[in-house]
Image (cartoon, rainbow, N blue to C red; front, side, top):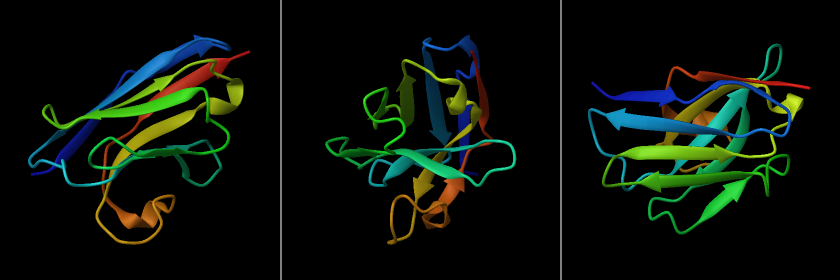
Length: 124
């Protein structure tokens, strides 16, 4: 059974930092694109960051570029998101996901494996 489990969420003040982790079990995803998405109350799930299987290529949403860093450790089957200079608008449930389709990496429908999500709350 494939499982993705996120951790590291919490509450911080604006300007603070958090590091999210995602651990995969049940199979390895070393050859898959992985990503972080987020969903705020009343809003659609949105793309945050993605990383290629080798870790050599990444892409970020404009709203987080320069503040967030995505990384992966294929040996440990883990994905991470370092979030710095957090803003209240970053408040959301954050999900890790594994891409298993060939469409755009920013489209959540292209991801077939999802974690349960971890809450990030940033206060002003």
